Length: 199
Image (cartoon, rainbow, N blue to C red; front, top):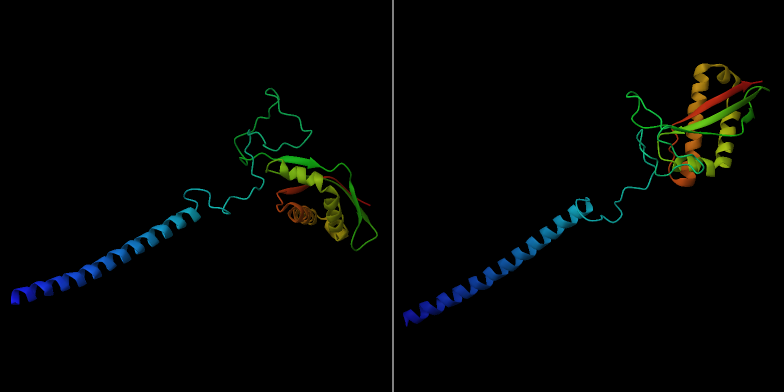
């Protein structure tokens, strides 16, 4: 009898430990699956593999290196011929600079005097041709922003070299503000004075 009792105790004990062991194995497997799924999602979200869905790089104008072809050339711009291709030196920026000149000049009263300022302007960018296409598309709004900045300029500023430099910086910000509002990206590096007349 004692042998039978011992055997049934063992069976009950192994049954308990068998059920408990099985639960532990199932819980361990679920835990491992959860950790694995979390790790896979983390790698996916970090862009280590696959399309991270919403984590793409925004489609903004890119910097164009000297000698590289612009993927978005300004309409009407002639393609460079091999013989006429520009030769860039080793120094300076590794990115090329392109310019857009406004056809008409800008004339405005000065802020604190009856004097007038008349300027001929160009803008420059090192980014692809979309920026200059946007400048051309939004030229009316850009002209308005530039005229507002000119009207806020004092006579002292237009006669001072540093004042002209600050005016150029303000005009650059004004042009970029118009582009950012309309296209979501600025991209103009500088506004350049082609002509500057104070009357």
